[in-house]
Length: 226
Image (cartoon, rainbow, N blue to C red; front, side, top):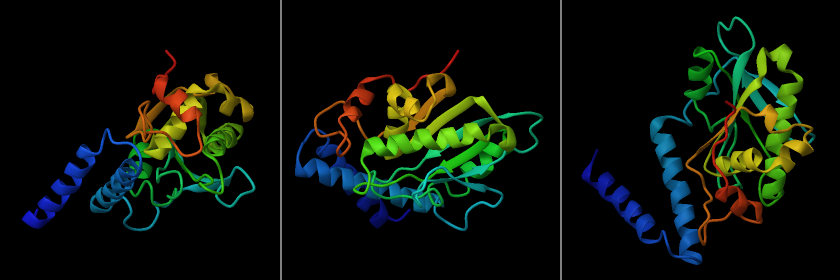
């Protein structure tokens, strides 16, 4: 790693640390920089490199072009396999299922006996955060309805999200309205895994146009059935 590269990353990290408790425009700038750092790290790790992993099936769960998902079946499963549903990040206003996972998750999880799905959802400002959470629930319903055909154990479905996606899966996993709106309930979700959550219960850290963000942030970020 070059000294110039190290200095640049150190400067960005210092800026983020210095602005953690500062509300207003500086907090917004911090969030933009935070997203940029995450994108750069993903690029360096190869998350966006190359074509999408082969072997997926694409399912439309709504009428909007963004309401689609890709699912990879578990390899070598003797029966219905547990499923991980991944929700990409991007500040609620960008990102895509095709480049959010790279070659890591769609190869790793099926090889370990899990089915793996990556979803798209409608983006801000065309949709509200609440509508995005409803999209996540609708995507789960589409898979549940096809569980037998896809080789998925509908009783072992875990939601996983990164950044803004972490916020969305936390909403779906703590506020029953979203699953209920899709004809489901908490009983249909075995667990929730928010990664690098983008919203917390402190000033200046809430999702755009979404009051439930604060409620979800105060709730347990992870719930799993015993």
